[in-house]
Structures are given as structure tokens and as C-alpha cells.
Length: 397
Image (cartoon, rainbow, N blue to C red; front, top):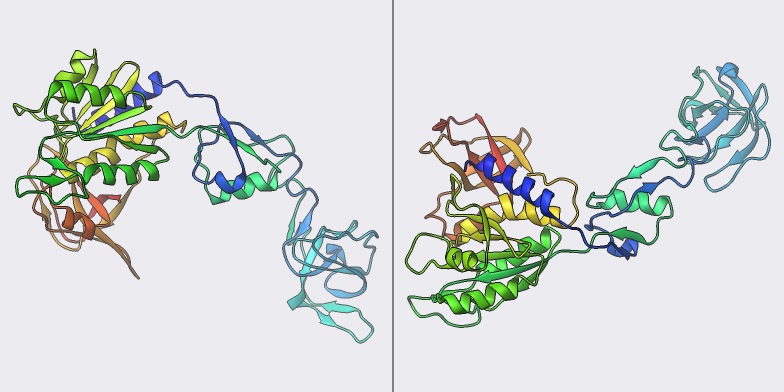
């Protein structure tokens, strides 16, 4: 499949096949980053009363310019009990409710105070000037947030403002992480020259946690069908299974055979991208799985492009978005057409905006190059070159 076809396949299959567990309630201090599981309604008009958005004086618009008698003061958290009548004003602070009779605010900078306590202004005012009317933000009973939204700091403020404490959220999906291969040893061990430390499960664990899941790291599966099957079955106790390695066409790449023996349905097993071409996606025993390529860059990129979308949807999000942006190149870039490439790059923000610079690397095993990158440039499969200054798609890390 092409990149777009494969991503659409993941989103379509997971959306159609997911069964969301019952929601759980959390306090607001723990709700940031969680996925909302209920409608949030305004419990009253927002604001509940018309309020001033400036420090100044509440007046009748028809009375200015002119001299006005100041009959009182009102501050945020208080209420003026009287009524503003012709020729009168009430000193008012930002956020305070507008007194009855007043329909405009004159800023404090635009008045002169008299010795008798009066004010004089040479400014005219329009009705409604510097006033937020009652209910201009939301009406009582209005739906403000809907299920499937990942809660950010503004959403937390809104939940607090409408008194929604605690709040119902979707449980975090558990994601099993299984590295495969006889060459892999624990990160705590010193590898022999023909071995490598198990780094992929740790990068995946960080990516899973960032995407809202709970990583479950499993012991490494050896290049043996019986051991791999035992570890796969262990991983199927989680909500999503991510396997790293063993999905190419080599003699000891046995992951697909083991999954097939368990009755797996395969939706695709190759995608026209680099890195990450030998990518497997399917479902077995009602659980979705990804067979991610074993090279570190391939693992990281294919998670961000495909597995992250599945995880977000399984976590209750209404949509899975890919955070692409555009940035101009600092130098020419060429590649061979046929594959959509996601290559390490840096995006730096200057006074003139973002600047995109490709990073030299030695292939999908070059982890040091990945640490120097803060983005992946996206080279379209049907375009061979871009000139310096031309804009290119970018996936931020």
C-alpha cells in the first residue's frame, strides 16, 4: 500500500473494530492528557452577568462625552446594588458585573478626576463598549465539550469553570511491547560484537506513554516459533500488541507465521515508505497488532505514522490526526521516487519563520542521528527534488 492507503486502512479498521471499555472518573489534577468520555454542559450562562473587560467607569453611552458624578465602586467578586442614572457613573474593575442602568465602559485612562470626586471625559462611547454580555461565551445547558477529545490545559480550565469535578474519561489502553530476535540482549547487559541492546522497547514505551497508553514491556522473543508464540499470547492480554523485528523476508523472520498460526487476519504487510517498508498490521483474537521493522528509525517512524493512530482511537479519541506542518528548506534536497520518505531533519524557528534542514544519517539504524533531529521531513513519493527555499511537509518529533 501507499502511505496514505495504509494509514487510512489503520484508521478505518480500528474505528470499525474497537470496543471501548466503561469510562472511569478522575479528579481534575489527573485529567490533563486523558480522553473525555462524557458531554460537558454549561451549568449556567457564561458569563453569568454582563461584566467589564476594562478598569474604568460604567456609564450610560448617551451621557458621554461630559462630566459625571461618581456614585460608587464595584470590583470583581462584588455587585453594585444601585442603578446608574443620567449624569452618573460607577467606578468598575476588570471582571466586575456591570451595574444596572449602565451600558458602556469608559477606560480609566480616558477620564480626568475632579476635586469633588466627579469625572470628565472627552470620549464618546458606543452601547456595549468594553462589556462582555451575559451568556456571550456560552448559554446554560450548551454542550461545550464532547466525548473523544484529549483534554488540554484550556479544557481543564473549562471543566473547573463549570464545576465538572470529577470528570469521566476513557481508560488508558495497555500496549504490549515485544522485541524479537536472538541478537537482542537486555539494555543492562554488555553485548558481544554480534549482539545489540534492546533499545526499541524503551523508545516505544516513551512513544506509547506520550500518546496516552500504558506500555507493558515483555521479555524478548527468541527466533523460535514456540517461544515467539508464547510471548505473543502473553501480549494479547493487552489492548494492542506491538512487535519489533522479525517481519522481513529472512529465514528467521517468523513473526507473521506465528501470527498466522494463531488465526490472524492481515490487513497489509508492506507499505511504500522509508524507513519502515516491511510493516505488518492485522488483528488476532479480537486484538489489533503491528509488526514493526526492527531497525530503530523504522520502529519509531512506523509507530508515529500508524500505531499511534490505532492507540489514540483505542483510547477513545474521536479522530487520529497526523501533526504535519510546512517549512522551507535551507538547502536543495533530492531522493529517488517511488517511496514516501520520512527522514531526520531539524526545524529551527528564526525571525523569518521556520527553517528546515535535512540531517545526514547512515540509515535506519543510526540512532545518534535521530537524537540530533527534532523532526522528520516528508519527501513525497512522486517528486524527486526540492530547491532551497521551497516548502516541504514536516512531521515534528
